[in-house]
Amino acid sequence: MNEKHPPRPGTASTLDARDDHLLAALRVSESRYRRLFETARDGILLLNFDTGQIEDVNPYLVELLGYSHTEFLGKKLWEVGPFADRAESREMFVQLQTKGYVRYEDLPLKTKTGAEVPVEFVSNAYDCAGVVVIQCNIRNISERKQMEDQLRHMAFYDALTKLPNRRLLGDRLGQAMVACKRTKGYAVLMFIDLDKFKRVNDVHGHALGDLLLIEAAVRLKACVREMDTVARFGGDEFVVLIGNLDTDRDKSRSQAASVAGKIRTALAVPYVLKIQRRGAADATVEHQCTASIGVVLFGRHDTCQDNILNRADTAMYQAKEEGCDLIRVDDSAD
Image (tube, rainbow, N blue to C red):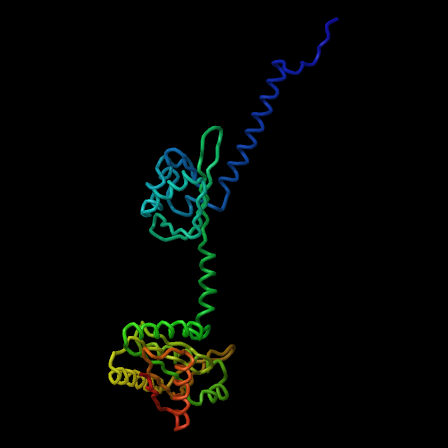
């Protein structure tokens, strides 16, 4: 009687079954890779290791940079728009070939419309069935950079008036002092305090006081050059820093007095402020607010920031004690 026996290991039937299993496993692996490649929220670009030609890009990179799939394929890395305008693109590919790993933490690329997109660029080389492929992962870091910019702005700028704060003022003052040493010229720092500002808050509330501070900041910036610094020192105190004055002390003092007079006049113009009230009609308040201004002239021999600030502060309090709406100058610089 003939009996059917299972195929012995190593027979053709067993090998066919194993091949079918391997092929099925490869198809599953390829399907998983393709799904990851096509749904990844990072750009992926595959390069031929030998030629630098782009072999594939995923849909997200097409979406991010605005170039079609066909505009990428078959081209060298440095022939495609986002990389073509970068002088280091060829050098980048040489590094990819020699190191197999390249990382740029902040690489600005241009989209097809010309917009700039900051990306993190990381590449690795790997062997794929005997063919060496370079995989470049390109991550859009626009949101991260925007958050970093916001944090940086919060660290150096006043939240209400958007003016530089004390920290940034200290940096700018240091730069001005270095410039004085280099040019042998003078600079001026003004300490400005709004007279009787507390009365505004007491009578009309802090919301109106904030509006007045914002308007005062606008007026101060209009009185100086774009290169000069207007900072909020705290409360109703502002500081104006003007560099690159004349090398002649008397001329610099005259320039400083002229700007201080312009500021005093601008801040004394009546403020017309509109208060928005929830559930009620908006109210308009007109208020006149003068300022006391202390001015200090400093030059190449001044080496202490605190001394300059204290001299300006003392001159400002002298103006207040003598009746407010005044300018007092300390020009005891060498």
